Image 1: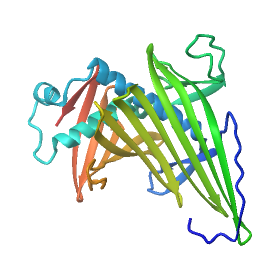
Image 2: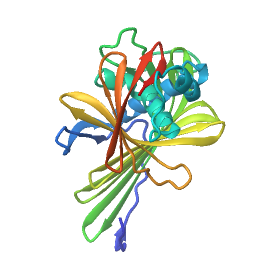
Image 3: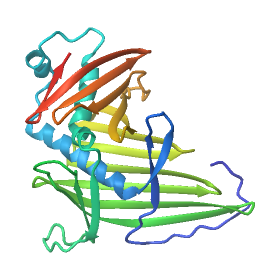
Image 4: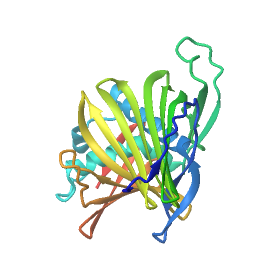
Length: 303
């Protein structure tokens, strides 16, 4: 938002909790996008849950390495036009979002925190995150506060621009594993235009963590995951959830971690049944389809 300031005032406001409505854009089957009422808590919930699932899988090595999957779990040779990078990105997305795709979403509920333990009592709120219709559902608990809110207001030519920034601190508990989490939310409003960005980090430790960034400008939504191992960024994925025939699908693109440029290949994942997923790759108009079967946490690719 470029401007020449004629008059300006800045108000700094400290607050404990701020929850402003945002919009998560889902693509309908016709290809047009519609807004679904939601807020930043939805983003925090998805980020926390998916990041924890990924970090736990990496920690316990429940999912086999991609090399093992390729050698042991496929009955046919991998097609030449499907790369190891294609499979690595697909594996990460299935690990993080497989249950969300299969069960058509997730739920979150925020309540006042009544936990009196030394670690958790200092947080005012607890968010319970779960996936409906999932047997043996794992419950994720996010204990948190949103703090250090800063509001800046600028007036130029009788038009007001407002920028609100809030930080989040907390602890996520998933299957008795405790993850440190951090978040930051910025919302800019000028006239009828609103832009926002949210960043959410989930730490296994200081060198192994997942960063999720969500931003919206001119009704365009970007939603990116960055994965760090041993302090090095190893993967960056841009995702978008879509709805087709009332079913949740995931579209994603891989981002080159060196140049930051999105790859041209478009990936789509949809659920076929409780264990089977269909993956399609669109490379310059050529579509390649294969499947992935998840059994006891192990991802098996079928070509």
